[in-house]
Structures are given as structure tokens and as C-alpha cells.
Image (cartoon, rainbow, N blue to C red; front, side):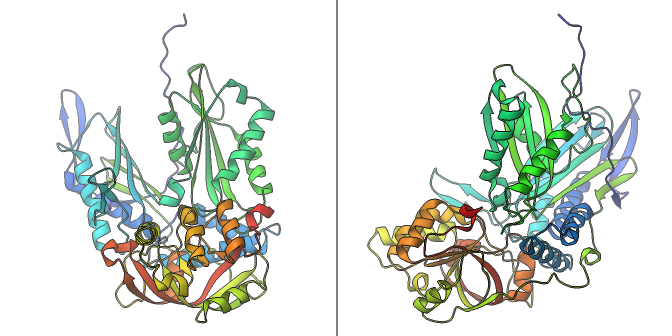
Length: 534
């Protein structure tokens, strides 16, 4: 048996994060029993959480914005890659004004903390962190997305966006370090665990596996992605936890080789291989091209001999991750980019004009117009949309199952799958980007056969059942850019009116007027699916 040796599991070698000082208040030190104790007043935790969640909702890291700018400068990028990248940069300029968050899905608040054993707060830290999160969602134009169950089937929106996920760990020292994440449902839903075996760990098998599983990501989580692949893990939970942190850049400074102690390491060779695979699949930045991912992190972990868990996950175009720390010197927060305009080129990328579609006509006329164009056609929508998502669809299905008629608005207008953030004063709408289309797939055929949902607008790829339903019933699925929710609110959505299920809050049915709303034909009435053609 080998001699005892302790290996720190994730030996991050350095922290190059640019921090700004929030305050020197709330922290002090005291000597006791030969130890220097860092005392943190509970109010300091609330302040930090409040500021972290606020910043990360409206600002992004400069490195992320630079990668968007790099797409515009790459001659190999497609027109659609550039269109998406430019739109996202313009979206960030609007979000940085501090009124409209980057994405309408302002996420589940997640706090990962490493508390030094010589840090003393005297309270339940999670409570005071939660209070700061609560205050940000209360005071800023963010969306309440969290629902709590009362029975297995009965739920209610909390109206606070709590509870938050707060995971606190301990380590030596008198420093308190944090990673704050606000994780939207789209990217959270693209976290995958695959229980594999030793047979995966060879060049041919692993390459084939990655090529297959990359397609599971699709576009519903708003690429270009920061992709994380974790191979190994002492448990399934450890693997997925590493995926989340790696996608947030938390493990960028791990070693690049393993050792006998089982240290986690980045595999730079496989990062390059998987990047090439992602570029070659042709999905691109949502509507075809090279930039399915910005970058890839591959983390290799130790494993039980009988298990080989593999985790895959992403941080999306709303790359909302921010680090923080509390030390003897004060409370510090990562400095995000407050001036995204410097990444925006002087002129927009040149593109063929979009096809103008007037939605304020009888449905049969709009369908006939769309039928003239092939999938991948870029559109500019003008007129009336009805907004409905998960719960509204379930309510309408229940009405139909009870023998009641389908609401006329579902037959007379295209349906936009979305749920807005709070509306700033003086504006028509809060941030209002599309939600993931696939969650509504189960309703499409039934609704279309009754004359509803004949034109659907959302983000992401859809199942074959939707393609077949559109072919049989003469319907269309139009894809909107996932991510730029602020620019849609400021430039494209001119009015918003709740017309049904008002008690559902952000899930209520709305009628909105849009101008020059960008979209692409993804599935047409002939059975063509853009993503199937890749």
C-alpha cells in the first residue's frame, strides 16, 4: 500500500480576476488563541450578494465581449454568425445602461462560497446572502422565475425569485471567496450526465461520443457557448458540479497534467479537438456557421474503476458569472465591463435585407407568404404576436380537454414563446427574449389541428414531431435570436397587453406589437427543418 498523501482536488494555480473594492466596512480582525480571525458583519454578506447579482444581470466579462468582437473580425464566420454576434454586442450596450437586463430569464441565483476556517460571521450565512439576492430582485427590473410546490402538482411563483441555491464549503485561512451565477433555465437544462465505462477512454470512442453528444446541446441555450466537458469524477454530483464551475471559467488555471494524487487538470489537446468538432457541425451562432462555441474547457478527474461519469454543460450568451472575495482589506467584487461600446465596430456587418412580413393580416395570408421562402430565410416581423409559454399552454390544453373552445387569439396570431422581465418606468416592455421552444412540442400537433399555433416563434431546435405537425397542418416554426432580450424590448416591442391568465405573472398570455422583429424560418410547411439539413 502506498504512503498517505493528501492532494488538493482542484489545485487552481492563480486568480487573475480583476476586482474592485466595494467597501472596507463590515470587516475587522481579532487575535485569539494565536489565530487571526476575520470578522464579517452579516450586513456585509447581504451587500455583496445584492451588488453581485445586480452587476451580473446588466454587465458581462470583457473576455466574453472580446470573443463576440472576434467573430465579427473572422473571415471564416458566416453572415449569420456575424449577425448574431453583432446583435449580442448591441444588446449589451443597452443592458449596460442599467435598466434592461441582458436576458429576460434573470435566472436562478446560485452562490458557491469557500469560507476560511478563521472567518467568523456569527449567523447563518445563507440567510444573509439570500436577503441581498431578494433585495436585488425586488429593486431592479429582473424577473421572478422561481416556483415552489405545495403538492406534487400544485405550484406557485414565489414573487421574490427565492429560494437561491447556496453551497458553502470550508478551507484553511481567513479569506471568504465566492462565485455568483444567475443561471437561466435554457442553459441549466443543457447540463447532461452520461454514465460511461473505461471503454470510452480511447481516441476513437471518445471522439465519436463527443460528436454525438454535442448535438444534444442544440441552440435552445443561446450559443455561442462556453462549453465544459468533464470526464471522470468521484461521483455523479462531483462531475456535474465541476461542469458548472468549469463553464464559468472557475477552473481556467488548473494544471494541464495529472499526478498520482488524482489532481484535476485541463486537457488542452482535447479542448482543441472538441473546438474543431463544434466548428464543423455547422450549427454556428444559432442559425448556421462556425461559432457554436466561443471556447471549450475539458477537465479530467479521477474515477471509481467501475464508473466513468461524463458531464457536459454550457454557459450561454448571457455569461452571468462573477467572482467576489472578502479579506482583511475589505469586500471585493469582480470588475465587469461597463463600456461594451468599445467592442462594437463602427458599422454593422453587411447582409442581404430581411424579408418583411406583415403579421396583421388573416392567418391564411401570412402562411401563404411564408410558404414562398425556404428555411434559413431571415425575416423582419411587423404586427401582432400573442405571447404564451409553459403554463399557459397547459391551461389551454386543459380547456380543450374539458370540451371548451380554443381561445381565438391562438388561431388569429402567431404565438411567441416568452416571459418578460419587469418593465422599467416609461418603457413599453421589460427585457423580452424568446424561451426554449422544445418545451411546447407536446402541444403543437393537437393545437394546429384545431387551427392554433400555426406560426410559432421562439429559440432553439425542435423535435421531429413538430416538423411532421407543420407538414401535415401547414404550420411554421420561426427561430428568434436567443440572448438579446434588452434590444428586443427597447427597439422592437412597441406595446404589451395582458389578455388572459393574469394571475400567472410572467407566464400570463400577452398581446404585443412588434416592429422589425428579427426571425428565421426554421421549420416550414413542407417538412423541412433547418437543423436537419446541417
